[in-house]
Image (tube, rainbow, N blue to C red; front, side, top):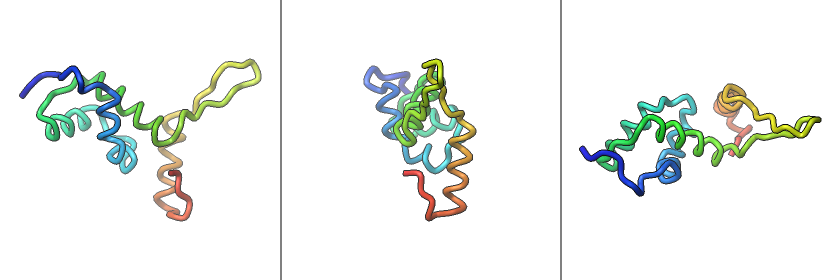
Length: 97
């Protein structure tokens, strides 16, 4: 198996795992690595898999950044996003997309 490819960057990987992340937001970086390895016959680093997952989450759910009173950005936690996904699975009429 070939090691990392120059054009296999985190954005490329994010586009290809978006549906996977949408269906299972708690997917591990190792699972993403295995998926990319199987699909493209190239290995990617855990760091790149993690970064791709983060990019896919932002692409799917938006930046989720709110301004606080002092002007510092405050992001909603990963667990809040995961909880909202669980709610939308339980109540299909309440889609996040």
